[in-house]
Amino acid sequence: MKQVRLGVVGLGNIGKFHTSYLLDKKISRCELTAVSDAYAPSLEPFKQHKQLKTFDRSEEMIRSGAIDAIVIATPHYLHTTIGIDALNNGLHVMVEKPISAHKADAERLFAAYKENPKQIFAGMFQLRVEPRYVKIRKLIQSGELGQLVRMNWIITDWYRTEAYYASGGWRATWKGEGGGVLLNQCLHQLDMLQWLCGMPARVRGFCQLGRYHNIEVEDNITTYMEWANGCAGVFISSTGESPGSNRFELHGTRGRLVLENNQLKFTRNDADMIEFSKTSKSGFAKPDIWNVDIPIENAPNPHATLMQNFVDAILDGAPLIAHGTDGLGSVELANVLLYSSLINQTIELPMDSAAWEKKLNQLIAESKHEKKVVQSTADDFTKSFNR
Ligand SMILES: NC(=O)c1ccc[n+]([C@@H]2O[C@H](COP(=O)([O-])OP(=O)(O)OC[C@H]3O[C@@H](n4cnc5c(N)ncnc54)[C@H](O)[C@@H]3O)[C@@H](O)[C@H]2O)c1
Image (tube, rainbow, N blue to C red; front, side, top):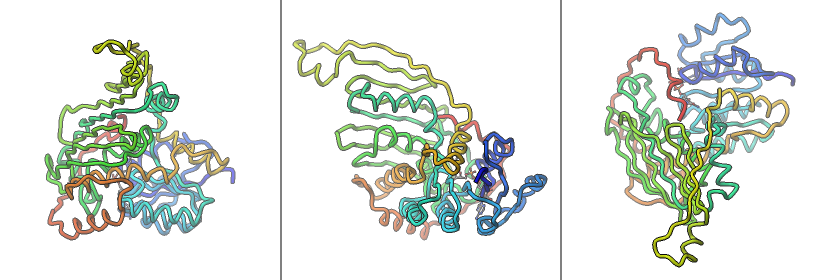
């Protein structure tokens, strides 16, 4: 194969965004040859492109012979069913975040990949190429930051209006989405959190359901996490606060990193703080510090970078930036923080995926929420990308 023939399923916000750079030929050795959406009017604008086949059923696109690979950009629950169908029919698969709506579904998707291990299976976790997070990771992995002792992330600038929640029948419902701010808005941050710090050993969530909006899922959360080495931290988010904050703070024994207002600052300890405490003769002395401003810039089109990497993996065997199975950590965190809150208990990880699925099914069965869907005005949703 010299060129990858790609299909996109789900032509909403992010699906259309992917098709725009694909149609602009921003991805080399790749041609968008088919699109699919269950809502027929979404296909209309694509019919002007002669090379494109359009399908209102993903099953038909998958079996059409028109594509070698598929990008799944539908509501979360369908990531699993469409992903399994595509893998079982010989396609390479790129799945949008979250990899699945819940951990048990992710395990089903991974089982299908295990059956078809030669196919490329990737996840759209584009923050993994953002220089600010890449640099933080380097500082951790090189030992510059020392042993991690604290992680605090307050990301409350995910402000969303009622119009946002009304814009899609699936949004912010147990049945259509399976969660709220954790699974949707914060999913990328949860991916970063576990990519940088590893998975915590135990967590406790405090989530408020429909605190600010007429929705049944969580839109305001305060959560506590603890790692096996004793590192501890809080992760706080909301879609109801404006202006809100976005401050990510990581403390290691060799200093403190703060990412805020698109600036990355490293306050570096001259000595490891634990060693210093053991050896200092003075009761009030502190390690000397160095203030380092770390230059950062935004990646120009991180989604396209991951898409190019997906194509390169298919054609050349290039290593994936984000393997599909890497999507487990973020979905598990989104699920377990909410589950912990709902059952009012601290939970040890790895979580019991079947227990959460059972709880979620109960929430779906008992839901009395009535959702009114209203078309919103044409917003520039790409404004929400860069956090
Ligand atoms: N990586 C990112 O930066 C990013 C950004 C936004 C959304 N997302 C993810 O992408 C997914 C879609 O989000 P969105 O905001 O684009 O949603 P959306 O509601 O705007 O679009 C979803 C689209 O899927 C279509 N659809 C629904 N059921 C279908 C089916 N059975 N077959 C084919 N098409 C179907 C809908 O008609 C709609 O056009 C979500 O999982 C979301 O988490 C990722």
